[in-house]
Length: 607
Ligand SMILES: Nc1ncnc2c1ncn2[C@@H]1O[C@H](COP(=O)(O)OP(=O)(O)OP(=O)(O)O)[C@@H](O)[C@H]1O
Ligand SMILES: [Mg+2]
Image (cartoon, rainbow, N blue to C red; front, side, top):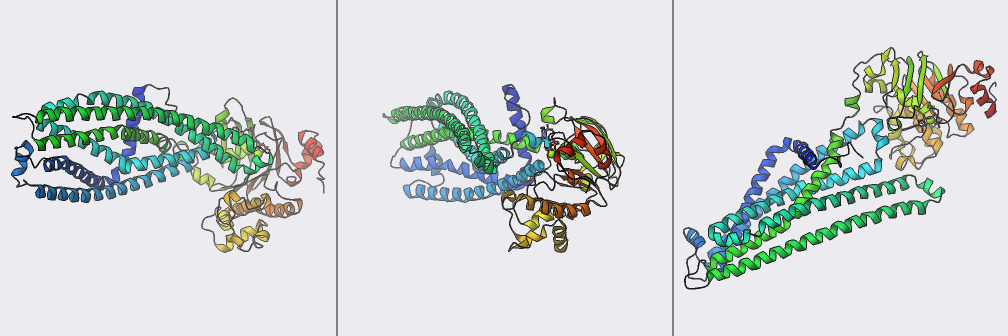
């Protein structure tokens, strides 16, 4: 999927990578380190205060006893020696803890949301600047759902899990220390079970992480099926392939179920194992602890016994919750993989490093340009294209479907690197020209018009973001789009629906033409720009286009030869090269491919 496949690399490499990624993630916290540090101070304070609970509560429970205890010895100095004082101390402890916790939660949320906003922004910025090739490789639906799922995971982890995890660590460390202080013997008895569990926790954690990663990947794939079906819903319906798509989806969700059930099974084994160990440990400690309070000269006071029990229970709970938290932190670090891969991959800004800003007049030359799509390197789509175009010429590209006409249009925009030869604009190589400078002089009415969900106005203004209302209306009129726009009750504010679904093909095309008119480019590319129009509106739009083409270099790609007979030059492209070139009148007399095409279409071309 995204970036290099890490699966086959060694484990050391993987953990190195994840440290690397965690570091990158951490760099997003840097700008907020002041606030973040304060959050951590609150976290440390609230966690440490939590440790007072087992001590105070234990002594409170054991207060009836007349025996002196080691903890009471210390607390007596502060005049804490009866039930009420212990209770008050507990109240104060919880009040302080809740105060600190409140600020901890608020601050952590703030820092997390700031960092996530930056990550989201960077990810989208990166995506939008990705080279075209990236979008051929990745399914957009899968990409977006994965990114949002990853961000959600990060959010939960950064906001609470990390803090919780740390709190539990403090609990464990503190409990062990106090236990060792009160009764080393009892502490050692309990600790005897801990290393075993720690090893099991790490082992299981890794295993479960692997299983859930698989399920995540499958879930992203199944979302891809939904997106694909719904975006192409009319295809699905017209071919009555609902059952086929459903089958594809069911297969995928069945797989998700199986993977999750499997990981659930192991999680279950894991948790029950932990519960058993923990209760076992508690029983042993209670048993041994009680034995120590027996007799005439007991090793342990009642108060210390209760404190030890509470410490053990707290530590047990902390230990029980650690593996789950550990694995969700691991998951979140895993989730950053895709995110950071995107954020740190090379985009057009890194790849297209041209800095020249020549005056673009529309003079273009291709010399022995060869090209294969990065995804299909073995198939050469263009095999040495040569042409020179002076400014303000109209060039027609004709040829059979799949000949490479739209590909030439893509290359003009520098969507893909060419594999051989050179493309020059006004004598400057395309690789040396600053990409935004180049593209700002071009406009295309593409073969498949896709509008943005929004109003007609928003879609037209896309051609020139600072256009005035008059300019927009003028462009719409010139594209012959105004006649249908003005019949809508909402006019320019009419919503076009998701991807323009509420408009007809011809209406969408005319909006795309208006957009191009508004841009007023030096180089105009019309890729089947009138294919979706009936012959009446085609004639009208054609007139608009003829006007539009004046004073700029235009490429017209068309199957209908009637639309291109006025071109200054016609290139007949077939099998990756220009087979014939010339004006319409010359080509029809030469009895070549073009003349044949004209014959086949039976178009009256002389009128
Ligand atoms: N994104 C892509 N990745 C890989 N191959 C592609 C891609 N786009 C097009 N091709 C292939 O490149 C060749 C030329 O395609 P292109 O779209 O340029 O043809 P065309 O002349 O515009 O055809 P049509 O008249 O049907 O629009 C075809 O064989 C096509 O399968
Ligand atoms: Mg095409």
